[in-house]
Image (cartoon, rainbow, N blue to C red; front, side, top):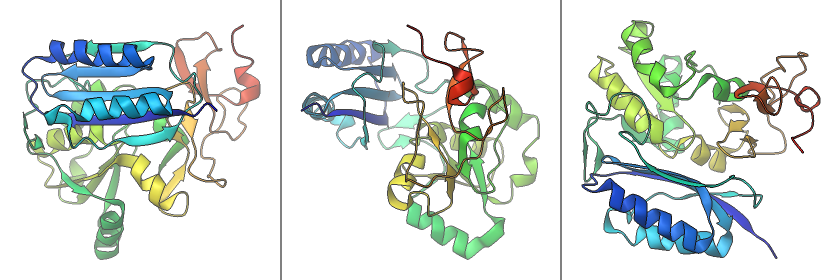
Length: 285
């Protein structure tokens, strides 16, 4: 019986030879028939990989066998068996492209100067203690926050992570510098960098949701502070945490409430948009 799975993980740690890590990761995945996207830099590794359960388990064991990746927080999700078109393992200046590779500092403990990690229960305690003073700050791109976000969150109008630094430096969020700011993203990797960049620019009390939306959804589903669907970077496009998710977005073509994301203006388009299944049309033959 086929049991496809997807794993999502990252580790910030100094890697003196990123290309050697790339070759090793590529060899492991190819030997196991896995597909997905892995980015390696001198700051660490960020990966999403999918395949059959037994093969993914072997991959996780092999990856954790490298001492620097031994404590990697592996997030598991159900797959379809056809979630990624190919395997891509690349070396880049940053594992998340904020455009600030020389500003980011990493040691054996992770990102230097980032925000304090809060697990989902610690997040709730902070809100119980500080109330409406707490600000949720979405560390994802515009299309992601359209279909799901934390209640009352600030959702920056950014197309890519490269847009964050100029927007922050514009003063658009200076009114938050003296308030407790909780950043969140899909699995946590973007917030590791974003919180450090924000602290370097004068934000005094910055937190990050440990494990991201994925870990929060695992614990509280749609019965906590999260609303809507979670955008994901594979063929699924979005996932829900329960059978009763809120529908926050509307189709850009007809206005129907939907959480569906598809290529725009059609299935062969290069841009993404919120499109109901009828307007998105059938997939390419």
